Amino acid sequence: MFFASDNWAGAHPDIARSLVEAAGGFASAYGTSDLDKRVEKIFSEIFEREVAVFFVGTGTAANSLALASFNRPGGQVFCHREAHVNMDECNAPEFFATGSKLVPIDGSAGKMTPDALAAAIGRFPPDFVHGGQPMAVTITQATEAGTAYTLDEIAALSDVTKKAGLPLHMDGARFANALVHLDATPADMTWRRGVDILSFGGTKNGCWCAEALVLFDPAKARQMHYLRKRSAQLFSKSRFIAAQFDAYFRDGLWLNLARHSNAMANRLAQGFAASGKARLAWPTGSNELFAILRNDAAAALRAKGATFYDWHPGPDLKAGMREDETLIRLVTSFATREADVDGFLSAL
Image (cartoon, rainbow, N blue to C red):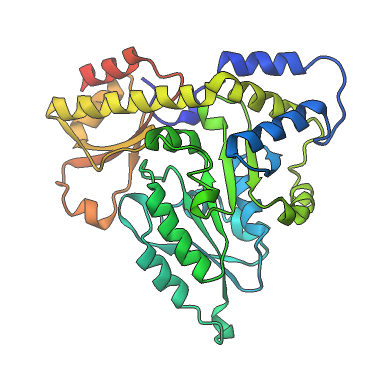
């Protein structure tokens, strides 16, 4: 009953086999192999336009390099207060952008609103040099609260960024989970809604270690080559990242894995509702859900072998919780079994 994180899951067997197949023989290095080039073309097919793709090893690297590519003196990057770039990346985005700053914005269930974003950008007028200057906006899809921005919500945030002359970055660590939840296409959830650059995650969804930066305007990709090299993310044997993505995309595996993990999260959510002993903090839109239950119930679940994290409720949520209640986060994965979910619910 492992629900701590989808990072705890291993690699899907098809992806592991692809790594083994790529291990033999010789191939040109630093992203120049035939396999690298073929997978880059697959990305363009998936997004229905020519894109520039840069393989990296971690989501933190992808996010940090994406934002660094927009760097400005005194740059301000606008994000949700609970965004991964703000809470869980040890200031890497600021470090790689050499002096930029994250500007956190509040919003319920992990989402920024267009009005809140516009107000935050408006606090940095161009004639006030002391405050710095807006540099970029980043959104997380699916969010750190397990919710997903709708296509219209992405477009509305994009309208605000474009009016301010800013690029829009999407942190897609759980990109596939949000995509299948919305029943959208990759193009519809990104560049058709105004996203300029995407951190495309595969590690949480069955890969071993596979992340990619996707730039929707290849003409703006020149500096990224140098940024990736300088950050030690240009792997000499990058074909091993390409091999993972090759299997990941084959026959829609990536979408099927996401559908499974989402289905397991929905099974948990339905069980919570039927139990009468826990309630969802908000509806889930991915493979990540948050539930409120009594402290003694959480302790009993751990005693029976369940693994999950306590979470810090925001002020609005905490106001509706009792003193003897706690907020927990549960994350399902491609490796979660129905028996794991049912065992957890039975223990609850």
